[in-house]
Length: 144
Image 1 (tube, helix red, strand yellow):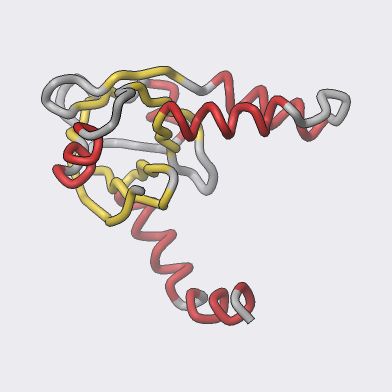
Image 2: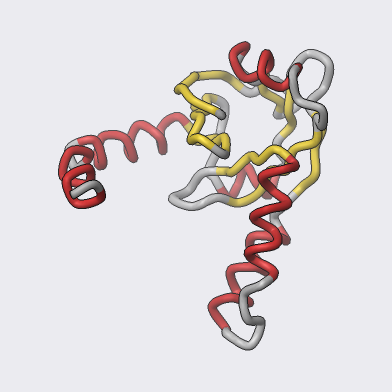
């Protein structure tokens, strides 16, 4: 549902405008609610409500008796915020999420099928450089 890579800048109120491509898709959605939380690899995850609810059910079904499940759920859900995109297509990022993702001013917004990821630009550039060489190798291993 979400695809592409876009560079944006946070404004003085720590907000960014979603790419026009994403805003157009959102116009067609019945529900306008999203959730933003700590992601993996140093980015933030942004989920549409429908996707979030499915993922939430899966995570709630993990055994709370297992320490790894408890730790992951604590960090994942404690970092989550329910948000609505404003009329201009802007989303604000809280200080603790900015700190988690080491976001300063420039960000990269990427669509990863069922979620949107928000990266500090330098972190994304580093991730991209480190992983692009392994892209074909990963394809061979994942799709053989």
